[in-house]
Image (cartoon, rainbow, N blue to C red; front, side):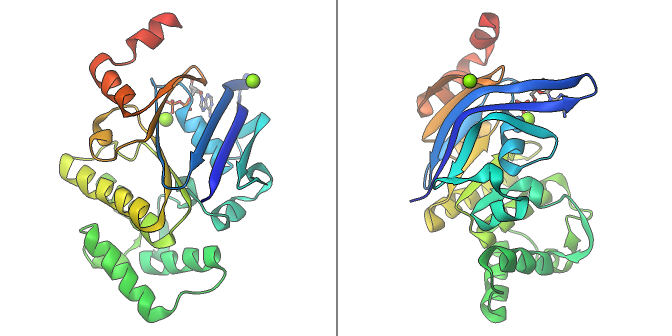
Length: 251
Ligand code: ADP
Ligand code: MG
Ligand code: MG
């Protein structure tokens, strides 16, 4: 099984006032087939971690490392990261006018696998995956995310996940803005991807609601750019009851 190792990661963001350190030494090891929930109050650095893994140009890793099966992810281009098996939501832009969803998915799949998928099985795979996510077939021929509602965009993200079959996915606030029905469908898709392909998942969320449907193996609580506490699923239950107050009064 593959492993994604984050070691003593320090990340700064460039602002108009100069560089500001956001992540102050994060250690985290994610194996395939594991679900890690990244929780914490707003502004604690959760999204910064996902941007650093994705290679967003505004976020600079000042020290520490990110390794995928021992390979230095920080040396990889954004495309190389996808090819290596990382699913990075920011790589799949919000709207792509003039490009249909079906063509976009096939191009992405071709880039990742290094060869185009056979057209007949591919069309069937797309149809099947859309059916499971209760997406109307018309979404295949619509332009990527153009005019999609918030919930439809989230479903489309999970469609990409199911078809591109990465080793690891970083899902940042996938639950935000979803009603309960959409949350269930999206969660089922994430769980299927884990069962079918052994996907390792970093599930970033401020709220515990999605963790009723996607059961984490490990929970990490971010506070002020560091992991303040880690535990198993019971930690999420405790956070659901108590919120983040005990972390914030300490700070
Ligand atoms: P979270 O996802 O946990 O809510 P973020 O990683 O988005 O937290 O942000 C962590 C901190 O870094 C916040 O204080 C935020 O204001 C700051 N920050 C993040 N990105 C930028 C940026 N591009 N410019 C300035 N400050 C930023
Ligand atoms: Mg350090
Ligand atoms: Mg965030």
